[in-house]
Length: 310
Image 1 (cartoon, one colour):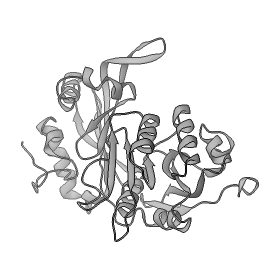
Image 2 (cartoon, one colour; image 1 turned 90 degrees about the vertical axis):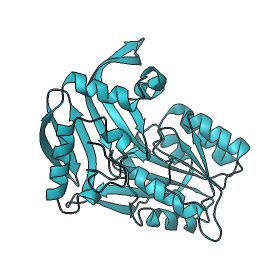
Image 3 (cartoon, rainbow, N blue to C red; image 1 turned 45 degrees about the vertical axis):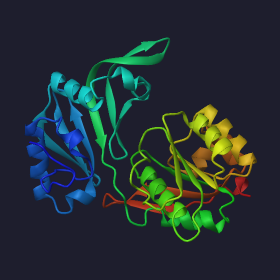
Image 4 (cartoon, rainbow, N blue to C red; image 1 turned 180 degrees about the vertical axis):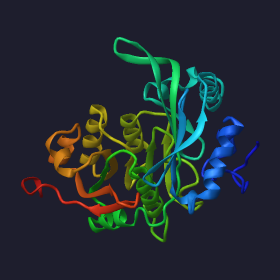
């Protein structure tokens, strides 16, 4: 079965055939069967989860749907090698972080038997699971974030927080599109370390500068030194080097829009790697995302704890 991005038979149009043609036909047939039986499948499918010797799953909205297909270790390993272009070594830095980049601004999370040296991942012996996240543009995902950021005169940073898998990256992409387009676009630098913010998300007329293939702290520094940005966007901050880089660049007058894993602003202020940024007042606005009962997501503006406000 050969599928293309525009092929109506494509079980998940949001991902290109370069990914799907590496999956066994029996799995593609089951995904297609679920798609035909599910109303609005293309809008609600969020993940494909592959396991060695155990069933594959689809995440549809907030519901897990099991597929009657179990891949062998050999099939799963062949799939991973295929999406890595036959060379896992070339993606060693990504594997150390537990993922492989995919076309179209997505990634495949990987789990299994990792090789470590001195407590640091240096490779993987056996792949046991692969989680493919399905990227998509969501209309108005960044509308609230844009409104809050512009309300601060585009001069102060914005933090978007949510638990994993709640659409932080989707909001950041749409916000980047909104800020970099229009009659008075902002010079928007996007530090994209995982390949999820790159691609055709922003439009041909966008004033966007993408930095890929570098660490987050290095990308922030390069953008500041060489691109004279009005704003810098970065996904999933939390490392000590990133925190230090953000403090340096913000002191120079460039606002940062960032995402972070977190269930509440109170907990981020109280005990998190980015609490020094919060206590220093780096961010002037906060957008939270939570899951809705129907499997969707609710975006809301959050206020810092009273004793930390201002």
